[in-house]
Image (cartoon, rainbow, N blue to C red; front, side, top):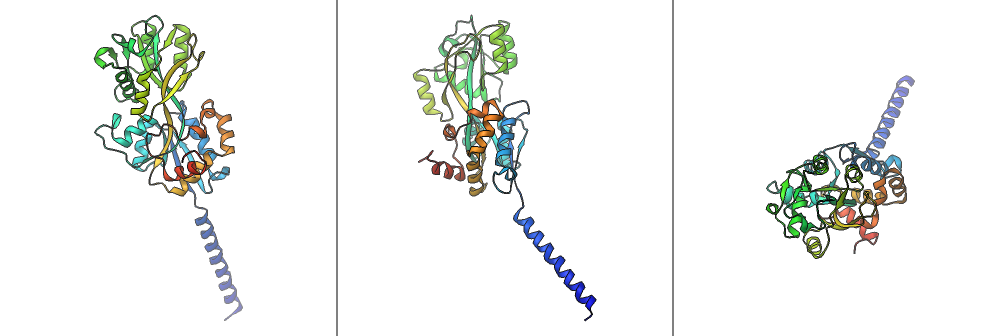
Length: 328
């Protein structure tokens, strides 16, 4: 065998060895992609999703090897459907929508159950507002009887919540003059005197309601009393809430209830992955990112993570919360 042949074989062996090492490293470092379905880019879900995706990604000292991205979407229902269909690993949704999807009720009546839907964390409250004209003489839910009330459009989460609240206080749809408007048109009709009140579900303060309070004057109708205790017992996705005085011009403290913005995933996602994602969500670095990054970020707290449990926790998330002493 010539020296040249030996040299070539040795060189070939080195190349093969280097290729094998490179392949092994690439395999070890193969990224795991974890999409977070959010909402429209102008809303709250999208920027919050971006903050969380940034925090949990491995290149930012998050979960090693994880590449998380916030994906704009049409919101709660679209995110649940994407998780069910396997086109997204996780997403944000309202707690009521999550409950209806998991149980096949409400918006999901007749559409089948999304039985694999699991909770990673409850994030922040989305408050039920009953906005009334200041001169409409509506001081309680009971006063809505006989009034012109918008309960939102068919197919929305708000219309289901509206009907639950009305029923809890003994009011049927036939007892009011119902309209089926989105919040924007409802606010316009209320300003014009063509509507007495409307339901809205979302974080406070909301710009459109703030403008209405300043320009036309409003009251917020409290959702409180013994009826609420029964409602909370019947529907675990609701929680007590309060809109503080001064949130809207001329409106004092108002007791109400809320649903919650939640981060959900599929039971098919690996336990260890979701455990590490949950653990990273609640570390000090993520806390700082949330506090600095968005007004709603300050409302995302570890203590609230296991509230509004309308669906089961993912086993990985549950393990973390038990270790952290938040669950028994």
